[in-house]
Length: 325
Image (cartoon, rainbow, N blue to C red):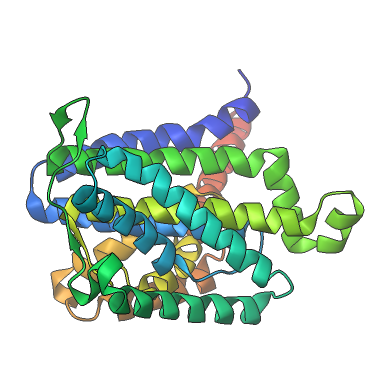
């Protein structure tokens, strides 16, 4: 098999090995499990943003709302119905997709700063609604799960939930990497660069945008479900709007050329903001400095930097081999 055909397999294989290492590292340690849950939450929100922001050049910042929908769907199914908790996943996805479609149609003529501003206001309004709607959401006290998740009658402990969450993030990144190379992904990326040309080719730009926003909202709702299932509770401020702002910069840190850059960026965000004791209290500032440094010295992110260094190393080896001959 040629190197060209092997190249698309490199990222999922390498990331799969890293996934196994991550699961082994987390183990049963409670603090490490917390870090893993935060990494998955940031990662899934970042992957949702990647679909329409990095590929489609349409920035929606309402991800606190989409994540809250997924989390509250799980909480309400657990406390107010006798249904299996896994039913909440499709319910949350459908609700998030419907809201994203309505919001997308209402803002279809907006782009850039104006689209970001409107979705930002929607996210703020949705969080305020969560506090005010006591009868539905529990108000400021939120929802506490009264039963644990079970699959075929077997209850899942927190250890299992964390492993499933890490695998879920890996699968979403894998599917997005395939979507990026698909005809839909090619058209979506072209829309971000030359919308007029895409429209002239017979591909409706509005439909592309709405579909990408819907995919992002569905992934965002999964982030809220993961957070809620791991912590067995959800509050209006559990996933604040600031998380969406962090997620905007995650692909720039890890690398915009691939969804796997989001996974790397999410891991770095968690480590920089929560797990470096000597920078405790300044994690967000350290993350901002790291993003600026990457944008200056490695515009394609850490994945792009690794590819560049690998290419130079391979080139040096090849030149050395030719010189010997």
